Image (cartoon, rainbow, N blue to C red; front, side):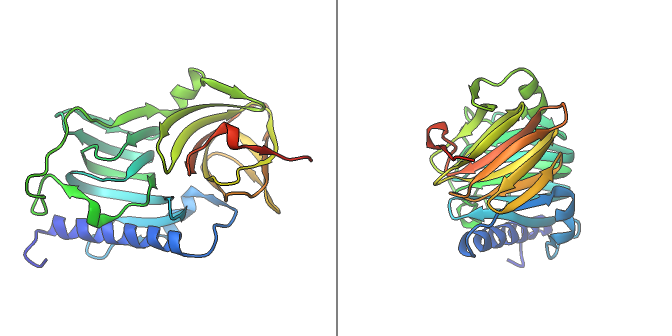
Amino acid sequence: MTNLPNWALVLVLIAAIVLLGIMRMGSGPTLQPAVMNVSELASKSQEVMGFKGFYSAPVAGVRSGGLIWGRFENADIPMHYHPQNEVVYTLQGQVTLNSADGSSSTLGPGQLVILPASVAHAASGSGDFLLFATPPSNFQDTVWLEGPMTKPGAKADPTKTPQIIDAAQRIAQGLEQQREGFQFSMVFDAKTGSAELFRIEKGVALHKHPKENHFLYILKGRGQGQVGNMTAEVGPGQIVVIPADVPHKLERIGSDPLDFILFSTPPFRVDDIVWLKP
């Protein structure tokens, strides 16, 4: 390990702290309802030893998937891929994403990056983000395609590339599916988790999901929410944690619709909704 260059040591430390956080989320107490401000997560994060300026904080999770907050400052991550699925939402900053086919994209605030398992990518730059991994990430499973940790014989599939979505623009264009009280479009779907863009025009009545754990990131609008015995007003920049089988409802406040990203593990299924009497 001591013969590796500094950037390789950094990658080891980054992965170790992220893995530790997700392992803690998956092995700890039962997931609890929560509302938190994403701006407060930096103060709760830990700096990665040996890499001043990189911070990571677990948000919430279970064994099948979880959400973390991260910050890159002048990061330079070589080409690699994971057997896990990842969905990344850029909160602020600017990061360059390179793909196995030689293309590159500049990521800014409001963009979602869909990285299904085995999609090779590299990243450089500075920025804050939310990362949903399903199943949880495991550094030991990472396949490095560049640098001293390159796996012999490993190759990237150039036909598999990340998908980039402007969340606000995509919602404004119209969401494909409409149900009682809400509209949504699924942007990623796997056996262990999914990600959707949601809009609530007025409100969604009391209901629960027997198996699904939900993590909402509010994009636009304000709402009054109830999760179990907890009630709170929520708005842009807040995360709402809704454990499986916990009754909840969400109503719009004001004239603007309520838009949010839903990260779900197991994946969100409309037919699994159990509507409850008031």
